[in-house]
Image (tube, rainbow, N blue to C red; front, side):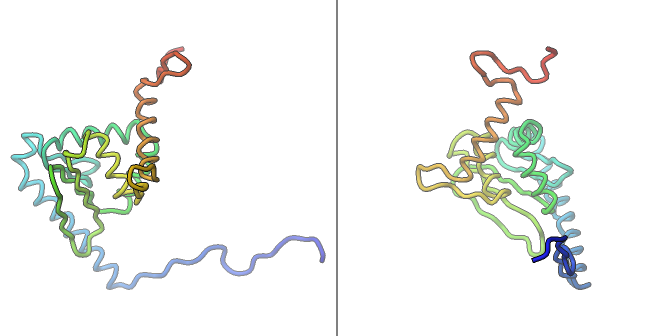
Length: 188
């Protein structure tokens, strides 16, 4: 067999399937509907926003409602700022979604679907623990599509949560390394 260069024949990548005009039109109308729905949602919940029970962020793509909504939005902003892993998951999700709806409450949650919309709905049950941990955990499920391990075990979503919490500790300067505090952006 002769040595030489290997020749590739044909395209180097698979071409995507072209969407029909009807599909493009349907997607455009669904996005317009999502924008109208977000506007009505904000107007309807305006009194709740004053009480901190409604928060909007990330170019109005993320809407949080329920008790401690403003606090949850602060946590999301902090997670995106300090955790590269969480930031990557959030950026990818918001690039693909029209709206991320987060509802915070107690007990069982409910979800409503929006036909034709590219959105994700997250229910956070405050009876299950710390709000920051729940935000990380439920975003791992909904945005990164990670599953929990076996009951009482350690699965992909728990690993995601551990990595994000470690990055938060590093970003805040709260991690001790060999007995000395790690201070990010130190003038040394």
